Length: 440
Ligand code: SAM
Ligand code: SF4
Image 1 (cartoon, rainbow, N blue to C red):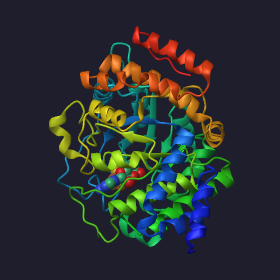
Image 2 (image 1 turned 135 degrees about the vertical axis):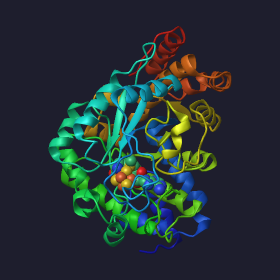
Image 3 (image 1 turned 90 degrees about the vertical axis):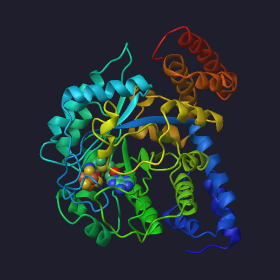
Image 4 (image 1 turned 45 degrees about the vertical axis):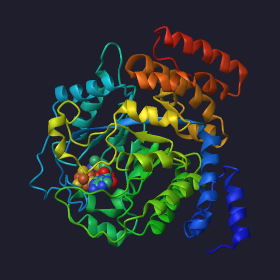
């Protein structure tokens, strides 16, 4: 579908209402010439501000094992990579990783692992328990999201019972011939089993689920259309849209060998993020340290709502940075958590360590309705302020403290409801005086 200038304007105008766009409207926006970028990005920023306000949620990945029986051509954990030092963390080592993340100030982790006979679901469940149980001076990890291989409904039920936040699984590519080429062996080579994972996850009770594409494997326009169709299909058939969409972009990785025909330029990638923001406005968009600091800063302005920070993709690499060369791919943002926090503040956003929705059971449909109706940002802004205050008081550098101190009043003013604003002002004072874990 191609659009003339008046149709483009009408579609961008429609997107401002935050009810989303059809796949064909999103597809047409993907073909817009560059002169529309400024307007497209401005609309995406406006929609993100309307739904989520100014908060940007932070998290870190925690890799527990890099053994893998798959052959994904793009990943250094592929079983054929004999040069990779293989690591399968013990529960003590996992606890040590969690403690390092807690000492940085993280409150949310994304548990990740390769798919291997040693990394059974029992091992994953034990690891979740270990991470939730880790504690440093009364501080702990408050939410564990999980990104592990496609599995059965019964296993998803067990993950739900283990109290995970979001279950994420990337389709990598929706283009079946490319999928087969990229996944020549191992359990992941079954395209339909991988594609059906979210249906099984939802049936297992995981109502917060996250989709994603590994951008760069195939034509990005095809992937965006298919991703939106997948989201729409799940929303129609299961009643719940995706809680998040991740936008990993292919990075160099040791021991890999794959064709590089479909890499996106930065401009194309930014358009993808902006169009996803307009097409599924209620969905969080997650960006990792695969992107450079400049790109990450820029993409906050076009729709990204969650970012990882100070990430290591080597199992055990937080406690033993000297071993961090066994990572899954090369990261591009090596800033510390405090540096990321400073940069978010300096760009006019509020860094957030919030885990409130999941702990108050605002998940699945309830979260979606709150987001769709534009109410979620009331919780987001309050919790961003309170969790950032706790971070600054406990882990903040002088520079973070200075950056935040200039903003508390402005951030409080962004809470529209006067009663909630005054309550948050009191709660903020309590956190500054030493109270912890305050959220709505
Ligand atoms: N092993 C499980 C799987 O593949 O579904 C869990 C996720 S894996 C640890 C995390 C994600 O890293 C993969 O889904 C893939 O999209 C991404 N990844 C792998 N190699 C990459 C590379 N070279 N560049 C960027 N992302 C990559
Ligand atoms: Fe294994 Fe996942 Fe890497 Fe594929 S992407 S080799 S399944 S860790």
